[in-house]
Length: 418
Ligand SMILES: *Cc1c(COP(=O)(O)O)cnc(C)c1O
Image (cartoon, rainbow, N blue to C red; front, side, top):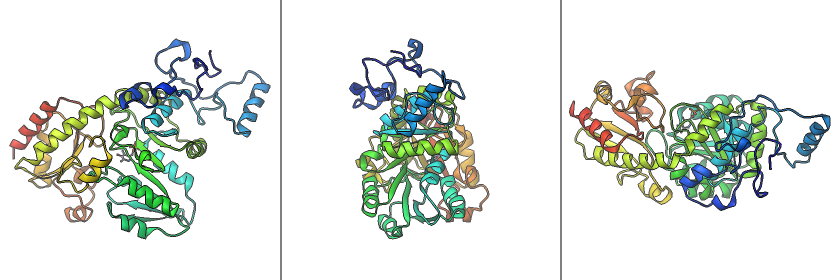
């Protein structure tokens, strides 16, 4: 049957696209089939790009029926205006929710739009949030500047210090605990069960930025976390060719966020949603390859005499290895390491690498390499960077899907130049 929105329904299964027989399958099956309608408009296999800014009503009665449906909260299986929703966007939202074992998801035009829209939607003047350090610089900036101006205070606590999180809670004021896991650049891993438990006991909501893990390696909602956010720009889209972000969680909370997105306006365009859905189909394949190569690279680097330190949660030497091993099914594709050199010679090592591009970002099919001291903290002196925990000889390597041996050989030749 062809529904009003152009999608075909099959055997009367629900219009939200959930096909019960695929919900509990593995990550790769869910990445390909999760959340998508089996029958689509024009019998197309792929979700169509519904490139429209608005949607039409046949007559006034149809519009009245639609408005009645909205008022009585019954929802509707059609769209009204492009800022409120789009079928291509909705399709990828369902897939992202499936991958994270969430009820629902809401897609945004970037990872930062996802984070800022979520916090703006739930916080008000006088409220307080707790944020772990070693988190995305722009997230921290948003809290410490924009939210501060709106009368929302932020306590920044050391990653991994759960007593400090609990001690920072202010009764009736603290609304959110915000953390990343794994973090950037030191790949610190939060004990999600513990953070969720602290949140529940104090009636404080918990948010994990799970960008570095992807739903293939970690599903924070399974540990009791309230909201998960991803920069879909990274692994989820996976091809270094678009920006998007997503928040997933419980149905009623996500519905409220979708309403607020209609006001704040951060919906991505349908082309971006199409590319994201296309990229997601290979998510598990890509991430498994990246996990494998990163593990091999981490061990190679750890035993290399020109490397002073390697940060990878899959290594026993990493401070959070135990919690990562218990909580994650793979350790991800990003490795940070310190080479035996200074700001200048570290740059020379990077320049000798032939496979990775020098670029910020991570998670795509192409390997990317960067020196955080230059990419993120160029405006600071060596001493100021050290105070922030960023050494001049630190390198962040985002492993792509190139062959493991080629990446190992590339590192080997670049390190031989010291
Ligand atoms: C990139 C990134 C963001 C921001 O996402 P954009 O899509 O670039 O806006 C947020 N958190 C983490 C951990 C990131 O890596």
